Length: 332
Image (tube, rainbow, N blue to C red):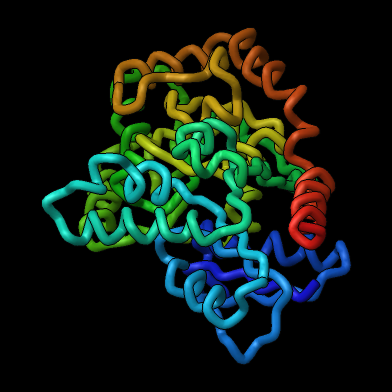
């Protein structure tokens, strides 16, 4: 098949949407498809399928494709922004025209689609009933960083990966480590681009005033993976996520995870995962961090929990899921 993946991030971007789109391109090309990744739909390109990553941002491309190619299958892949911000019921009747327009764009994208892909199951379960028969879960795969780098001998290193946005609560871990006792050897490395001047200023101020914290900025993906693989623990503190790829990246590198209890992490790790804390609760996170540093059995329990999940996040499994979906669309 000739497949166009539309993603709201340019070539060379280190944003999650582009990394996801490029991984999908690689997997689908391995499966024998001809794949292009672009930011918009170009009617000059003859395609057999459109995969649109981000229902709201890709809405113009989805509508344009349907107009130009009425029988071309369209797959809409939902992000956290789609699920947890733009498509919330309160947005539909908001006093803000922008909010109402964003809700309408997501709704029309889903309505137009032939298939809807979620990257974890819980978000899809919350979609209106009329869309449920279109829904498919495709988990994001990851590969371990090899050769496995060594740990720092004198530090308990905690990694945070993700661009600095308020919805990710990016400085919660930095606040939590301020509560740790002096003997603690926990040190936090935060990786990710500051998406506005305020976030940049906050990151720089935190790094200057917190001896346990450093901000490394926007690293190339492979460098970020190397630092993750050499850490003792990974923290995800978001208020909302679509399905953070860093969860699968930590699991395949066998890095224990402390995460906020939100739909996406519950969907990926299970509701009883022992490494959850309540989103936004600094003291709860600090307690988890201290336990991970000082209780070897707890750290081992986190890894033991995710060990059976390793097979869920292999490239082979992700590729097979895409192949199955595309075959269904082709034969529909």
